[in-house]
Length: 299
Figure 1: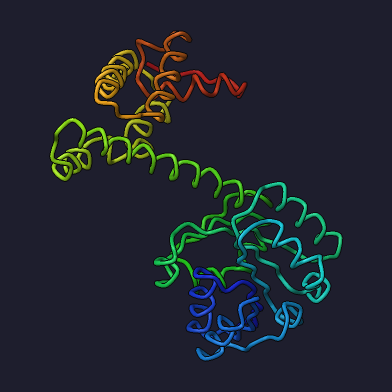
Figure 2: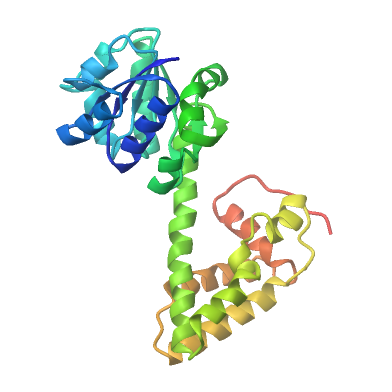
C-alpha cells in the first residue's frame, strides 16, 4: 500500500481521504481546520502538524483545495509543500482550478524534478462518500498509470483526458455544460408552471424526450458526430419552435435568458446556410465562429 499526504479536508477531501484509508493506504492529512484533521485521525489517518509534514517522503501528495491561489500558496508559499516533497513523489492536484494555474504549477514542479498529474473529479460529495467519483486525469501516461492506486480508492472510473492540464480543462468544459443546463432546466420548469401545467407530469414528458435524455448520446451521436447533417429534425424547424416558446413565455412574463441566447445561435446558423440541415448543425456554426478547422459532412 502507498504512503499518501492529503491536504484539504473539506467535504470532498474528507470523504476521499477516508476512502484512501479504507483501501489500506497510509494517509497523512492536513487542513487549516483542526477538527477535520482530528476526524480523519479518528478514522486511522495520521494527523500532520503542517502541510509540509503531510507531504514529506510520501509516494503521493494529493491536494483538494478551493481554488488556484490556495494550491499555489500551499505548494510554493509559506506552507512549503513543494520543497517538502521528494523527487520520487508524484503530486496529484484534484482541485478544480483555472487551466493557467495548472500550467504554472506543472512547469514550476517540473523545474524541481517533481512529476504532476492534474485530476479534478466529476461528482458531488455524495459520490465521494461512496468512492464513486469520475477522475479526469491530465499528464504523462506513465504518471496517470502510477496514480491509479489513489484513483481506484476514490473513483469508479479514470479517464486520461490528455497531456498535462487536460484534466483541468475537461473539468471546466464539463462544469460549464452542467451549470448552464441547470439554469435551462429551471427555466423550462418555471415555464411549465406559468403555463398552468402540472410540473411533475411535464417532467415525465421531458425525461422521455431529447429534452431530458440529452444530445451527446442521441442526436449528436446519430448525426453530426457521424459526419451527417441531413435533417432528422430540421434546424429551421427547431428555430421556429424555440421562437414560438419564447414568444409565449414573454406573454407569461417568464424570463428565458438561456433560451433567448440559444435563439441567436439558431439565427446565426440559419444565416450560415444550415437551416435545411439537422439541428445538430448548430455545432458547426459555433465551430466556424470560433475559427476551428472546417469539416466535411455526408448526406
